[in-house]
Image: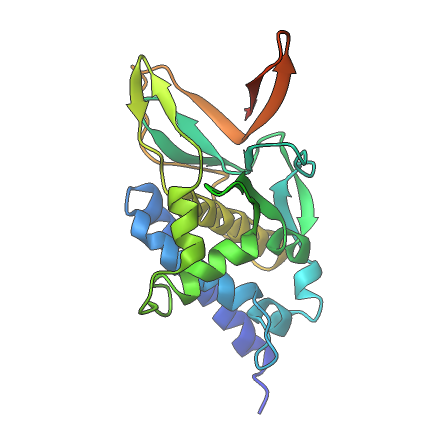
Length: 246
């Protein structure tokens, strides 16, 4: 028996409340909340042959609804890596999302779900591409959202070990963060904004989400980062870091 429309909307609002609660905890430093955020997003948008995502139960064109997404071009094929992750770089690398950034544009939920978010070369030299869908479903289905696989997921392990992202701040190395979790929380903030836009306009939803921050330390914000190789004379390889700053 099909659920009444008002019941579906009540379930949608319940998921919105779950999402807001987990986002608040994540940006207070409980980064493990990213697996809950991943599971909520899966409930909202992931479609299988046996189940219809909640957004499509609420509205038949649910995956065509508007959502804010990074306005990025497809990565250069020669790029060593490109990450569409919002963060603050200072004494540490911390998640920091600003949905009011000029680098956001309106997309559809379906395009957002399938957007490429990580592109990098593995330690074996293969070019790897991860979509938002792939990253979030790893966390939701295999890394503790709804299930923990007995064996470590090789794709998630690769995201942790092969991402060539490290920085030095005043000569001290900054630990590489778990960008899959950062990306998932950022996606949760984007989805929360979409739920407000499309279903619950009276809900109070912040545009900015940020963990910590020390005004005494030089720091800056980015919406994506890439490394493009180039050749100089005499011929030897160098790299050009491109950071999209806010």
